[in-house]
Length: 309
Image 1 (cartoon, rainbow, N blue to C red):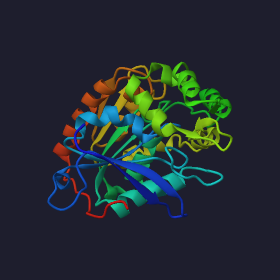
Image 2 (cartoon, helix red, strand yellow):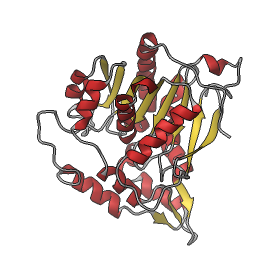
Image 3 (cartoon, one colour):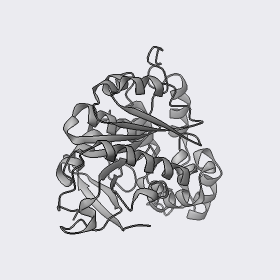
């Protein structure tokens, strides 16, 4: 893979430590090739971690640098005893951009991370040079009545997350159990292995458990914004590229969303909501196309020399 993977920590405004990774380029010192590369931030989907997306992003890492941040409670990032709404994760992403990078940058995210990136671009336009949104959560059209969060189709998703098994006697048992169920049974081998690397941990009882506890996933779902996403889209003035899964059930309203933006391209990739992990090679082709579009239309700034320590 081009470049190196460098871990970093980000301290939040309320004193937590979040874990992240820099993909592509080198250490960013003056005179290095990384200084001349466009910069992306990336936030994963709920319940996942950034590492399992590396295969999908591999195709662009020779010409871009990605600052991938694990949200609170994911991928080794700390979390407070309770989560309400998205304001804390939103502040964390903004803190990453304003303290570690030189905005504007390209904001990228999948699902939950796509909407966080969208909200940042709408509320803080000076931070965004462009958006790459992988299967953003727009499950209904603009003129439809959206059921309250936690009702309708959400109810089943939230209940599955709430009651999901999250401990096993061994890593082998966890890998076998997870790999035969849910979204993971459709994933390619490498993304699944990378998910396990930072998605499992040893518990105090000597078992193997999920790093992201079920309650964090539930809280993230319950805090999901609804029709306001169309208002955010209307406020975006930088180019937007949406990658949607051909068989995804959460992007019914994407056409309305695209119509609300000033400039938007929608690319369809084979697969379901986690198409980036199901078909990382094809997703990489789409990401390369997205980067071409955005770098042709953006005067991108570069990262500062302040690096994680």
